Amino acid sequence: MRTRTLGTTGPQVSALGLGAMGMSALYGDADRTESIATVHAALDAGVTLLDTGDYYAMGHNELLIGEALRTAPAARREQALLSVKFGALRDPDGGWAGYDGRPAAVKNFAAYSLQRLGVDHIDVYRLGRLDPDVPVEETVGAIAELVERGHVRHIGLSEVGADSLRRAAATAPISDLQIEYSLISRGIEQDILPTARELGIGITAYGVLSRGLISGHFTADRRLAANDFRAMSPRFQGENLERNLSLVEELRKIAEQKGVSVAQIAIAWVLSRGEDIVPLVGARRRDRLTEALGALDVTLDAADLAGIEAAVPADAAAGDRYPAAQMAHLDSER
Image (tube, rainbow, N blue to C red):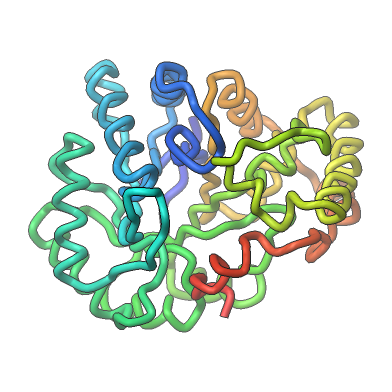
């Protein structure tokens, strides 16, 4: 497994990380046994970075990751680095009620995460979305206190814009920014990515397959469950879906020429954007994990990259990456 470093102050991690959200929430029902087997397979393959969130199914995902670590061989368990998002407010019906970045809340969230995960520290800790009522300096300062006490190793951020990135970095060392980045989600390239690079902050890229949309496995006639986020996602609706799947077919032509899958070439493209970028793959099954890991063996030369750019130009995607209400929570989109 190749490795990359999260920024100038962060840890060395596997070149691909495993995002575990879909094992608990937002993409329909998942198989717990297969999910844990997938985590074990990732660790066996040398994946060290595991990403979760305390609000993924209200703690379910952290408990699942905790179980996977407890049941993994000791050597594998010790290699795991945990990236945890916190701060989303939920209700018993699964609703969302904003974000809480107050210092007291930060420490409270961390205490519960440590217990659910069954660990004595969190490797990278980050607020899932910026709390508009709390200055980013206060939230980051609270995480810095957790670092001083040994409960957290590194401070991360999630979906913040360039200005917030600068303010946070002026408060404490920031290892990485977790943000959506894929062939059809390239908004960070204008201001956010250059700012992160200027500040020595790495990128952990989620949504590299755009929630399966550009995986090569999604079809227009697929019926989504009511508890699947994509049933409400603008990019999966009507004409938007048709347009986006037409881009996938153009990408498929390039993938077939190289003898790889669509998913592999999409992941390889994100890997090619810089050594400071670590893609997170949201595999929920071992076969999908194996496919994703195959992207590490895909080399894209200048001609390949030019062909991909022609097939899927920047801003070619139809529809926003989240419904309007959720877009409003993204500091990165302001």
